[in-house]
Length: 313
Image 1 (cartoon, one colour):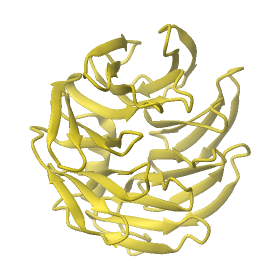
Image 2 (cartoon, rainbow, N blue to C red):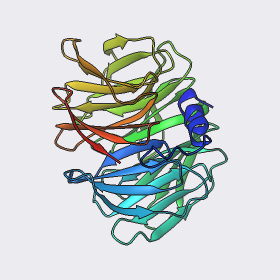
Image 3 (cartoon, one colour):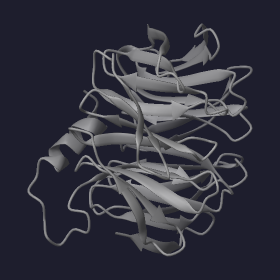
Image 4 (cartoon, helix red, strand yellow):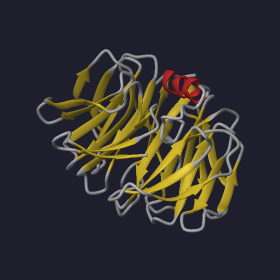
C-alpha cells in the first residue's frame, strides 16, 4: 500500500467534524472538458459536480459501497468513470447519474481510471500491479497485464491516444503502446514508489514523482532526462499547466508547488491544504489549477500567480 492511499484511508476513518464542509477527504478532482465544471471523488463514497464560476454544487452521484479514490471525465463530456475501494469501476451518465457500466475483475484495490482521447476505452490501475483496458460501450475487458511490482498507482493516455503511461513500483514509469499493451520504454530513477506519471499537453514530455520527493521530467521520444526538482516531501499528484512549460505538484506537507521546466525556477509555493494535499488538476485552457485534500475543500488557483481564487465546499 502506497503512502498516499494509506493516508486517505486514515483520514476517512476519522470521526466527521461538523466544521468540515463535506465531512470527508476529497481524494481527486478533475475539470470538465469545457472547463466549466469540476468533478470530485470523496471518502463518503460520493461523486460531486460543482460549478467552477460559482462554486455551487450541480449534482451528486452515489452507489459505490466504499470510498471513491478517483474520478475521470470522458473527453466527449458525456460520461464519468470512478474507481472505488469496493473493487469496482463504474461508468456514469453525466446528465442523468445513471450507472451505464459496472466493471469488475481486478484482484486488487482500484487506484485510478483514465479515458482514451476518443472516449472509447478506459484504463484502470490497481494494487497487485494490475492494468486493465476496457471497452466503454460494452463494458468488456480488452486486455489486462501486470504493469508494475505490487502496485500500479496511476495511468494516463497520451494526448494522441497512442501511448499509455503508468506509475508504480519497480520500473517507476512505464510507457506502453495503447493498441497492443506492449512495453515501449521505462524509467527507474531513485525512489521506492512513483504515485503519479503525466504527459505534457503535446505528449512530448512526461513527468513523474513519488516517495523520493524528486520530480523527474523526461523527453518521451529519446527517453533522456530534461530536468528534475528535488524536495524532501512525498509527491502525491502532478499536472502540466499553462502552455505546457509549467508543472504543478501537490505534496504530503499540503503544499502546491509550481515549477517552470524551461529554466528550473520555482514560481511559487502555497499551502493548498492544512495537512495533506492529495490531487491537483489543470483547467483545459491551462489558466486554473484545482487542488483537493484532507480538509474536504477544493481550492481554485491562478496558475501563473498562485492567487487563491475560490474555495469550493
